[in-house]
Length: 315
Length: 315
Image 1 (spheres, rainbow over the protein chains, first blue to last red):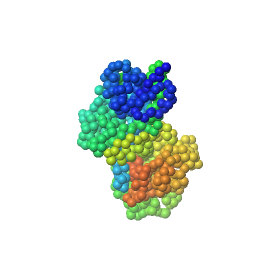
Image 2 (cartoon, chains in turn yellow, brown):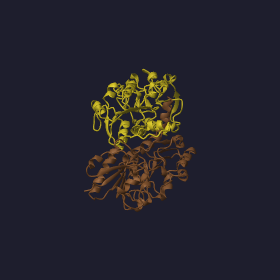
Image 3 (tube, chains in turn blue, yellow):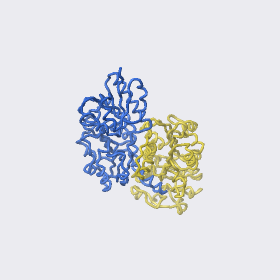
Image 4 (cartoon, chains in turn brown, purple):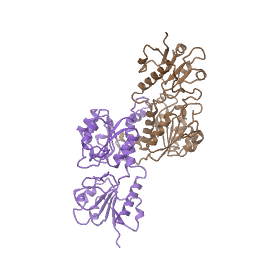
């Protein structure tokens, strides 16, 4: 019997894969070898989720993996028309990042409300300067993106007494449609971008939308850099259209040292780490192994991405 | 009819007092004039709650205010044996600071879990350095101080999924007694000091107690500076007995510019601002006016301090 071939896009072996020893042949690829190895792989595990290699290497036709799994929530880095048109199943790491990212958003919201960045700055200068801060309970948040990450953010903010509105592509119970967005933005104290990056969402936070927000509003992006026109955000902060912002994700990552975003006043820059709590790689490995064991038994896979929409459609 | 005299310890008139116009004669005092004016006052409002003048100026016997109200939760700055022994009623601002302080503690806990201080430092250096952070849900916190502030802290941490234990002077349902403290400290990820400063609590967080804590534990003090041996804390951080700490209160405030605490690695210093959210002075003023209106009708006052214990006993 020939073992199925699992091709891992990463030089390092992911944790927990040892459990599959004897049941799968594991090969590794990087951006330079992926195109050559893809045709002979049954399954592709996109472990290096910062890589855009899949998009470039995906074979137009001919043999290709029947299943592609990415160790990330977003799939924008691997989707291409050929993959979308194929019968290859694409799955993601839905679930692993929900609670960590929700906590990270709460950390940023509370840090901005309590003026912690300024506290650190003053501490460096050994300066005692009392300031009034903001109560978070009773403020309003709009969370854009109604997947499990957006819903986890809503749950944590609600637990802090924040009034929340969730915006998704399709209006349904508890979820506003895109038509409500501008009206909600105009009343929000906190705007959180947690949507997948698709043709519909690319650049959705632009100069016009920052202009709609309140001067006291703060904006947080933990989704994908492409959701935001970062120049427009920097401009909105400079003109005081909004009061502050935090970006954990960027169009180009790592953010280059010469990017002007590093020192925009009122902007917190963090290195795409919102979902990555201690043990996250283990969790991602365990999740893949569990999914692989379903796949080898011919059972249906969870977390199947709607390749046209670019995300896992949910309830 | 002679109007009652309300003596305000502060040069500035507190907000909302206008409502009492025509019903009270308002006088002001500072540290130098307090002793002289106290005997002719019916009510003393300690509006400048950073002042220790009451302790020094309180008359041993003879005429004195029948009621002293402090615009703070703690009463340690005004209590003295003569005041404790007198029949003067002392009240505090119980309630105003609960939610703001609870949010502030949550902000510090989340900021430390998500390594935000380091993120700011790296941002200043335009350095992209991904790190793993900690999940807060599922961690354990011990909150010392079972008054309304301690209970509000427990509520907010619980809402974030933290397992909490509350420690107070008197064990009761939901509250551990002092005997459980060391055992709880040994298992805690977060230790929060929210107790009143009394003879029993002074210096309770000392070298021995920091030694009991886990190397991964973080300590937060939003109570009173005197609860903590700050030198022992700095030492515990240097020896990595614990992983981090945040102090919002100090033995001497403002913290002098030459204090070594400003740059202890792993220590966050903030200027006694945890409870002071926008509108707090208005709330304190409104709370006093409401209490005054009870007092002038001869109705019982809320928030009456047990002067022997040094706090408002609660359920």
